[in-house]
Length: 304
Image (tube, rainbow, N blue to C red; front, side, top):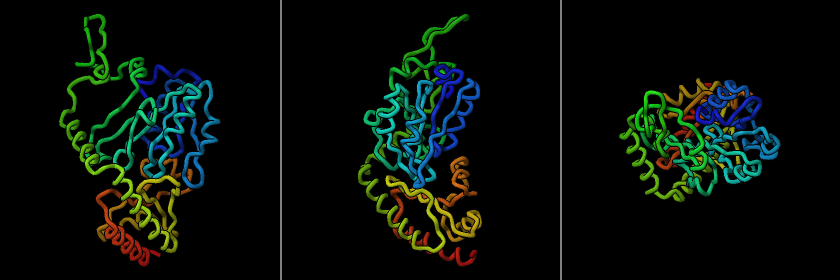
């Protein structure tokens, strides 16, 4: 958002979706506050998918940027980025994609997606914490100013002025996190070694099995039923607070996430206090899903 500040002026607009993680919402809120611009929220369907008709209607000559999650960390929804890119490009608007949740679950080809920016986080893809990446099309990175100043990102320095280095160095001030970058590289190569097509197929089977198992339990409601979805299961149990249920599951050796999952506006728009979220990955098994379902049933017998 800081880098993009020069592209947004008073009464301009930035569009995000109602499913965004705080990390792809709060920065745009702050940018719009500083520039006296407007943040527009694209609504979702009842299934937890982006309402493309309503989304398209939000775009106009004042829209300066659209930023969307590739995958919702709450709903598991996989947004149709190529289709979204086609829509926004009809208006000449750049598209920024938050890909933090996508890298470990689906194939990501930024050239094919045709987005102007794509960001990712290493720790969501079995890598180290505290490092990620931002891809940007060269034409945009050339026109955007540095956001962080110091060594390496400069070309020539005098006491009264400085000029900035070529890409990508003008955005990389100071000593880089070399260990983190090597760790991220190793993690991404590890994922690639398992073939993303195989990973996606396996996780889809696991998700289907876990979804069917959850739906068979009385009083359980799954939150997020998009047609194109990855291995995330958010759910609630009738008459049971998510924290109480998660506490019992934890005591039985089942680790799940509870609360608003850093997407508080989404959870509140659904009329919920929070959800429980079981996250599946390529290392999980059907035996582990069965253990989760068994513990869930036992916990519900205690709480209901």
